[in-house]
Amino acid sequence: MSSSTAPAPAPASAPAPAAALEPAAAQPTPEPAAVQPTPEPAAVQPTTLSVEQIQANLTASKAAAELNALRTNNETDLSVALKNFDAGVKVTVNDMCKTFKKTKKYMNGRLHRSLYQIQMSRAPIPWNGFTGMKLVEYNEAQPKDKRLRIGTFVKRNHVQLRLEFSKLTTDETTKIANAMLRRRKEQDLKPRRTSKGVVRDFSQSMTKVTKEVESTCVRTDSAALCFFVKTKVTDLHKPVLVVTPGVRDFLRDEYKTSPEEMIMKLEAAMLNGDKAAPKKQQTRTMNDEISDCRGFIQDGLNTHASVDNCLHLNGRLASRKSAGMNYDNIVPKVYERYGVKLVGWPEDVPLTNPGNIKPRSKLQELLAALESRACHWEVAEPVLAPETTTVTKDAPAKRGRKRKTAAGAEGEGGGEVNKDSQPKKRKRVTKPKAAATASPSAVIG
Image 1 (cartoon, one colour):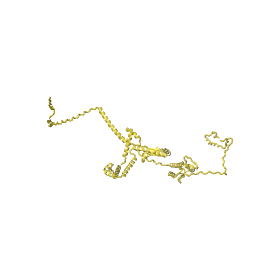
Image 2 (cartoon, one colour; image 1 turned 90 degrees about the vertical axis):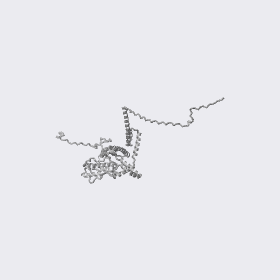
Image 3 (tube, one colour; image 1 turned 180 degrees about the vertical axis):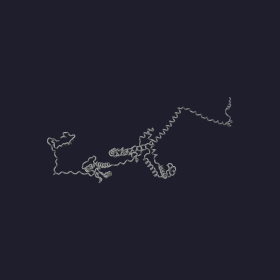
Image 4 (cartoon, helix red, strand yellow; image 1 turned 135 degrees about the vertical axis):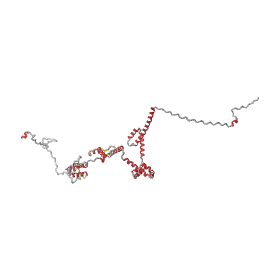
């Protein structure tokens, strides 16, 4: 049995080998596509707003602008208030918190920062002091119409000033800074230009002075009288009076016035100054001079007679009442009683009551001696009392006189009292009646 196999036919889709080696035909390059034009944006259609919407937008923008301005002004006012703040017044912090609607913590922080900045900004700069000194030297040699200000002077001589300033030593720059500090202190001590500044400075200073004076008087047990008044009419501060109770009594008793009246007179005198109308010179009469002489003599006697060591005289204590002057009997009534003596009486003037001294020239001589204290009172040497006489044994002793008693009269101790020893009643002497008032029988008889 035999078998035969036929080869399988090649698939029709397979390419021929010769055809596979041939290069492929070039394809044509496609043309670029035409650029399409960019479509224009659609026009914005205007929105139509109602009248209410427009008014609302305007109100909102206006309110925002006002709020922004208010915040700016508030911050500016706060900065100004912080600069003008006085650390010695604690109430101001709370007032500022209420005014600017800030918390106390925030205000204390701002206050501390503001005071620190002010303190740092006021530190002396030697360059400013150096340029100021050079400007003063330059302007002193120039006429008034050619003098310069600090800005123009520094611009014109900037290079030369810098060169000279660089050659200064540390000690020289320190001296310039110290001079600036001294100048600042002198300016601070000067009175403020504004009336409010003067009132504020005066009130704060007077509070400190009053407390210091009162504490010193209490601590040292002393008395004080202080007046503080203004010297300009434009000033607004009130007069301040510091007085202790004892001084008030002294002024009332000695000068017949009060501290309030004295301080008002002082303020009027300081404000008027030389413009016050001159007072008319009062003419002194002889009675005024007599009164002054008596006053000087009596005041000196009262002063010396009231001292304790002058009151002891002849082993006893004299009266503490005001001493009475006795010109006619001056030695026993004044010298011996009060232990004082009048020294320096003019020799040609008789020692008598000033009202009896004539002529007037001698009275004026005595008044001049009393005013100059050439005639004054002095404490006399103490006079010892005479010793009592001793009684000897041989001397007869004196007996007391016995009072006589009469029978029938009883005394205090039950004894009889003598009627003759009793004081007799004085008979009243009557004048004879006149003829008009006498009885007719008496006239006829």
